[in-house]
Image (cartoon, rainbow, N blue to C red; front, side):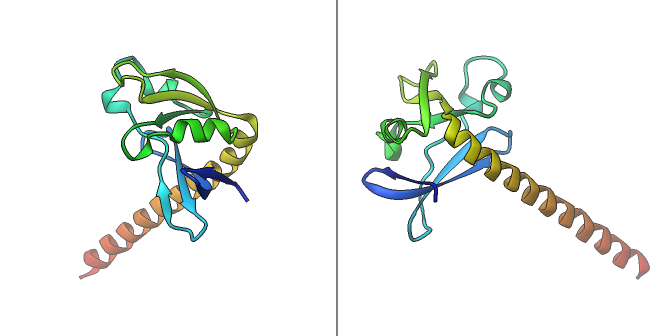
Length: 139
């Protein structure tokens, strides 16, 4: 099981994608409840160019402020990420990090499954729309 300790709580990490296809990490306690989201989608606040390209797998934006203050140190200690640099304008509170090789393997598997589920949901919406259109056309 993919568990680490975050804020003195044993958590299982789950990997997914934000709408812009950058990596999201969700931490769930052992009861399965969402405990925290160590990552942040910083695209709207990014002061550089091409956020979507820069933050592609295996890179993640770690939010280390507010309710997440200290999560960066916990993820580094657990060997989940390698700390990189902080993003301009964040006062050192949002970091560009890389997943370690072990966690890259785990994340790749989960992200692939996430993409498959997202495609299936999209296909179901299209099919339902098509059936609704056909149904109303016949009336």
